[in-house]
Length: 162
Length: 410
Ligand SMILES: Cc1ncc(COP(=O)(O)O)c(C=O)c1O
Image (tube, rainbow over all chains, first blue to last red; front, side):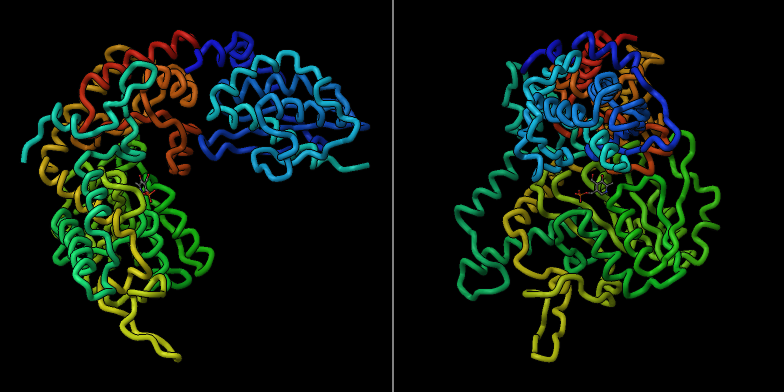
């Protein structure tokens, strides 16, 4: 079995101990809720999009180190980004988790994401999120890592189109 | 009847397996149990030597298969002290048994405003079928609350049961390990004019079961938690009640006659066993019942009381306030199923770290989300012990937990 060092990287533990962007946002920010039916974890994502850009994002809920650190890093990564870039990032993260982007339509793990033609997956920078790469070696934890991302995708779908 | 822990363990081939060079510390029997060679062999031998349809064909091989199948029913009847084997209905599992009751007894007897009483300990299998009936029929659900240490709070039981038609409760909690006073609860149900349904899924594999002493009306349990195969379960019911119920699934085997304009049902137990049953699994369940009967269920309970006490003691001695074990503290009112919180570390992370030492525990909501909300947690880690576990398993658990505090820090 791969060592736990692969999974519990220092940066992950740091985001777990001091999660960024915790809290709620009032409307017009949208809210989406995600559940991991396996373990009962719940997460809420609040997303404030102004002119197609993520103006603010906040997260509440409970979960394990992997799901909460993934949520925390995700919130940092998407803040200030254009929605189109966020979608590219979701795809990039998805592919790092070993989930095929082409399968997005049929996969129930992640809500399907439109494949914008101009999205060039490999070019999106994951930054700190790279630390979650080790999760792939522990397949049962992939659902933990992707929970926040599924919820973010749901939140984006809630954003009224101007 | 005799119980020798070391010999019992040798009966389970899975413990010959090593993962990463170390044996498996299986502490997830409340989820599903491992299988002894006796059960594996009985199923294999049946497939190799005796397999044939049951209840349908006149040749000798089919007769033999039918006899073996019905012998399993008699074994189960004796195991729970049923008055007759006809009272034993084979289902897929506890979930199906409880759904059968809600569907068949419930739809025949419950209407808008009728009261069904459940408890805060229940597994989703004893909640959702009643929710479905609530949505369909407008029945009313009432809930028996818990005391601080996770036992049923019976203070207002009489009031809760007033005008109730059904009292359906678990005999042992799959989360807290709490053993409920089944006989007292059955009496209270009857005093109120309600029927008493016992979810025995966790209780039956670990304790002496006597449905007549309880005075119960129905009992549901699953083979896979008592050393038998998955895919087969039991609904026991009092003959009079089963006779009065409409059938559940329709099809072959459950009929006496079928004409173009209708059908008549077969007598018990066939009435509730439509279609080709899980024949091989039933043989396996029969072998599991033999196996447990040979150990003696009183011995099984004694073994688990010792082991449960040992695990609780060693965990609390080593970790003090950093560990909190949910449920009753007195082993006399609980089984060796220990849900715990440890040092604020999420159960998923605990389970991950424990897996490094091949310690298999369940992390999650245990299909009891209302109870989780009551405990104020979204999940717990649960270590559950069975006949093949011994003190060394508890020791590895205690030791391996230290690895979690190393990573996540106290
Ligand atoms: C108390 C209780 N009831 C019902 C069930 C459902 O059993 P099955 O999944 O075998 O139908 C379980 C299984 O975990 C249980 O513990």
